[in-house]
Image (cartoon, rainbow, N blue to C red; front, side):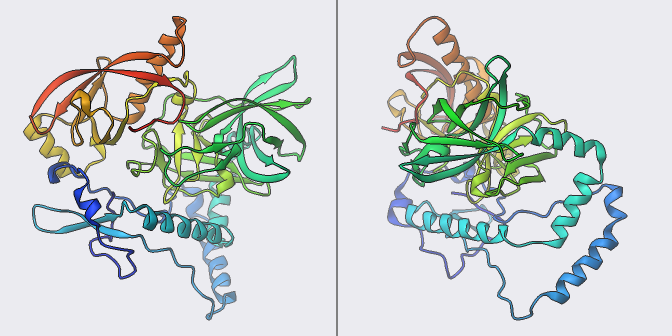
Length: 455
């Protein structure tokens, strides 16, 4: 569960209070329970460029015109209310609320928020148009960088039994001069016929689906599926037919705090280009460990789109998740995707409230690591609430670091000629909260590129 601003008292529209099942579910001690700052609506971007300030009067005039043309009787677009339940009581006695773990209530909110996003996408906001124009097109050098990168961002449609099942965005990452074919990176959602609400559940895929790529000049080509990962939800397709497509580089090093740019295609293949920042929040319990998040939004067909830095390098691939948009960093995409399955759902110490981080540091000398919030490895002595401090002898502070290490283990195992379904030993450093002790635990786990299974 998560908490967010303005969520101290649940709204009357909250689906339900915490059930007995929620109360009995193993949870972290109050000292380890995070209070995450998770706004459910996208914060307004702050533009400090002097070239924009000089054009503010233009926007004010346009906004006045828009206000005068709008109807006073028009119905406002309302953001759906999050289903909140009490999750902890602070030392001062204040009750903090977060989104419920009840799958029925959470899924209802999930779909309501999706409809809200779709309606929001149909609204033409004069302020957004002018500010985007000033930001991207008022700076010629930046315009050229994004324009060049956008040539490698394409639209993909998948058809199964003669019916379109999904539309996604793709990124051209490789080019074969001899075959005149391109390799396109996108989300495996493009061929997903049934996607459950819980990312940890099994999905139904149609690898035989017909996939067509549409490039910005409206040229189309059939694609052939090369590979897809069920765990990371990424797929690679090869174009069939002679096309000339530029490639865009994937950059493995993501710099937190920097301005980034979303590059995706809408359902008319028009470009989506907005500035965003990485959010310092953990995934929900029904979302993959490896997801990172941004403070912007994309339509469903923007899944598979690029998250680029201001030099035009691709640092991640986007997923239209709710209530906030997720991405997978390029460092994970560039590595062999067979990995040891540890059977752990995790949250990040660094994303806790500062008071909780200080408490961990003062009492247990822990300032970073990954908190276990669900575990399939209890027979090895790892419990919910324990903190994973290291993996294979390397200290870890976030899930991306852990995934990089696990993917490296899988890659080295395959290089020795071992089978991808074989078992491998992984050593993790664990701090046991209940015993206040540290020890190394060796997990013998299976290598797989499938969805992680919790027994």
